[in-house]
Length: 397
Ligand code: NIG
Ligand code: FE
Image 1 (cartoon, protein in one colour):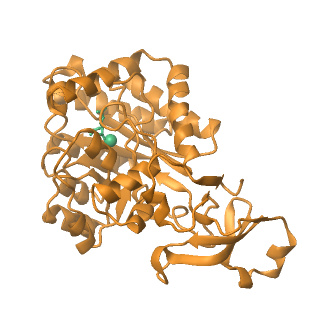
Image 2: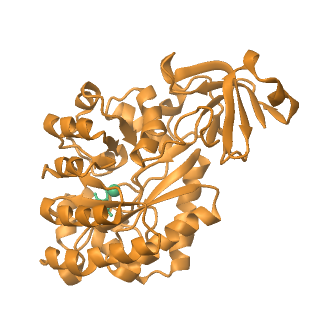
């Protein structure tokens, strides 16, 4: 299949967005065989099927590299409480927060979890997402963590989307272990990780390093276990305070550190040295009405790639719109529309350790989003409008 007369956002160094005007993409099987200007299309490519895109924009398929999209219930009541003055931490410490989603998720059947997750996944797909990272972390016992990860794998079978899983057993301390976080790590989190990894359900290991969650020492234990299993790590860190989680993650050569509102320049330098990606979550910043901005200029200064994601979850970011995330990244974090698009493609893929997507080049997977826009800045510019024309997943339109 040859896609013709499109503007291509390749993120090459030649132009802003790596824009190739009046370009073409030749797809063979699940891959991009050739990409370039219309006048250079190879002869064999012209012999097959083709589709005239009449000047539309092609970007890499979007990558949502941080989601908690598998969960049951919602936290609208907690939203009301927070608007009435309660803080996210107060709600969590009074037994609500993540633990209320844990109760709902434990009770839900695998079928129900799958059904509710698919409706959210469909919203992401409708806005051009082709790769989704999905975390466990609302089970917090062995069976329920496994249940969540099985649902995540089933999503990739039921929809034309690529799923990358993260084990997030160190997300919160469940009620039955209140005040005994070390016992939880030893008796539940580490054994659950071993079982899940053995079942082939884990692509990476995540944690939440925060006053309301786990200390650096507890996360270190989880990361050591990941290392033994040969799994990459990443961390929710520096979201509500600075506990040094990012520097710990850097020590383990983590893929990313996520949230990062309270990260310092020392943290950013450690990330740069370790080749980590900064995963920024403007939906959570907005929804929790945070005021401390992540250090965007410092990431730029040290060349740390900035990825963006929905963080889709019922407590801090109940959102399923990557385009709105891009808009928020520009309006709230002052990222440029070009950085926002790279955050949802190029750097999102990097944050997952994937090199075959997130960028348009010959040899990459043919995961594409085709947009009814003239200029890529329009993707971050509009609110509540979806200009997706078509989506291509592994070469299939
Ligand atoms: O990424 N920060 C921790 N975890 C989630 C929130 C989960 C929840 O509140 O249910 C996040 O924001
Ligand atoms: Fe998260």
